Image 1 (spheres, rainbow, N blue to C red):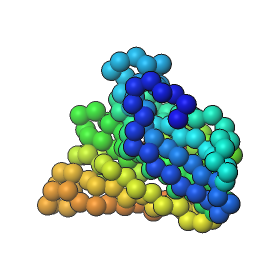
Image 2 (spheres, rainbow, N blue to C red; image 1 turned 90 degrees about the vertical axis):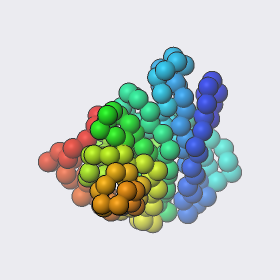
Image 3 (cartoon, rainbow, N blue to C red; image 1 turned 45 degrees about the vertical axis):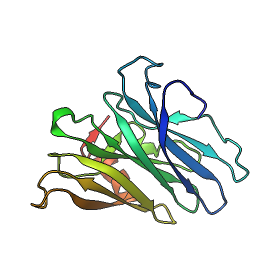
Length: 181
């Protein structure tokens, strides 16, 4: 991270077949230039196989209200990547798991460039502590998380969602799915 004020915590890293890698983390109050009380945002930076930065760090989350934290990343063999994180933008309804897909050059996937997708279907209780894994071809990713409350009738449970990236692009382009933007 190049921004060093306040806290930069909870890193995650993924590497492609060429050895290039992406690191993601949460940074406190960076979204608002260090204003206290603004919460955490999700940031990332790409590096080449020699460890040299390929571009400046960038903000991953679009929504900046409340905390965006515990980000995780995975990459395809060609370098496209997905970042998922826990967001409390739902307020009193609980936390959600958000995701955003990026091309190998670090640009957001074209039809998803202005939105974050909500990975979890259930909106009651809190969905926390995501993990993500992308297929080598970048066409699919699986996101898992812990759901609190009584979704399965017994307290906390582990849930997951398989997301087909080309199908997701079609849904967003022609028939919008529910997103926060």
